[in-house]
Length: 527
Image 1 (cartoon, rainbow, N blue to C red):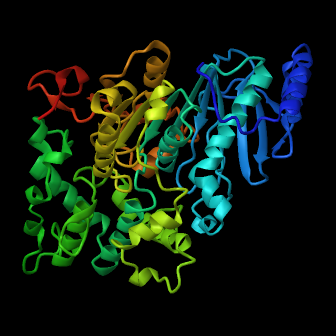
Image 2: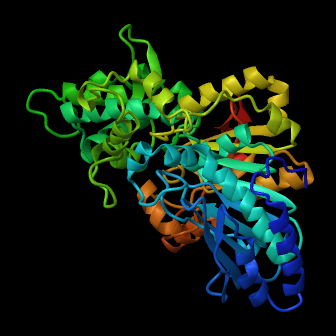
Image 3: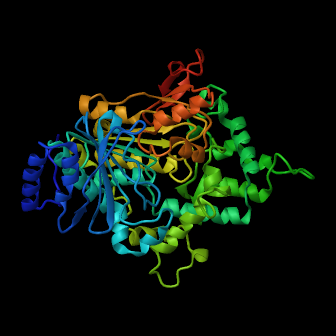
């Protein structure tokens, strides 16, 4: 394992005492070692006595440890009693955090696991942005401090250091993954960042506000979204050489190609069409946020998979776990971030000019320039994946980020530590009509431990799950969800076809012959 720096939690006397104590406890039993983890407590860390949890379902017997850092950052660490592989998997929380997530899904594969609530409680509540410490903890501090402490806990329980430390996160978790690689590059050997919200406190918020305004003026219903999806299939389905309802490279499916004006209802027509106002709402969602000159300053969502769940969650609603839509909730984030701005009003907020204010007020959450030099020097590896049709974490925003990565780190050097996979027919993190269930954990392990850089990753379509349905189907398996969603889809009798995921900017194009349900019938190409 590479040398780890920035161990800001170390208290020399306490560590020496704990090491001696655990050396004695190891001669006793897993129960004694687990219980004795409270000895890692000090002035900054409250570590509870561990609880030995018996095997249940697919989770083996394990030691579970809870506690807090600074009295505000809750954490959990779990460790299999037997069969530990020397690996740690850390889950970076998604959304607005506030809860403890998955720490069991990889225990049966020999991983220890850890996560945090990011330093505040209550999910879907952006009010923590009014507290400066909570904002800093959410931005970067909680993940770093918990990761460092988790390694100490695991080493104390198992009597040896973590050999390979991995991080997984999607959405805000993917953003946190990039933040770890950029600000604390020695924390993890391998990182999987899904839908990494590269413009979390700028473009994502500004576009959510603008789309909420558009929806308020000329609302779309789910029936209208179905019209949009049918239109996208008409215009773009065959661009990748196969009529299958998926667009292999949505960059080719331009807004002009959609001919949205042709969807306007004629005299007396009420079904299968849109009003002129609804067309403008849809055009804005696809195009993004423009400035006074008409130039796009925040890209919109690529066409395709309109019925995959993101339109329902973010635009039309309702969804059972939110009051309103995700665009409306995200609009409130701006209110909390800019609560100190005199006279701030969401109704009059300038979404173009106001992005600079958001970035300044939430500097702790805003990603720094993507110079991964220190991460490269540490030997770290990074896999990024994103749905082409992800509405909040738009693929075009990640494309721009990746181009900046290549500019700052040189293209040939970037290829040595980073791979980006854009997933056709996938919406936010999971869900949609494409083949999006892929084993990124094995891919990052192969790269870190065996030096095998991922090329094509084979993904499987698990079934026609929307984003919300997919969340229900995977249960609590936020890290190792591929197996869970495939099992859920198989139980419905879904046709689980395969596709290759190609390193961006390549995409999978049908060869023109062969079984279109098999990945072998597709070639990774660049047009």
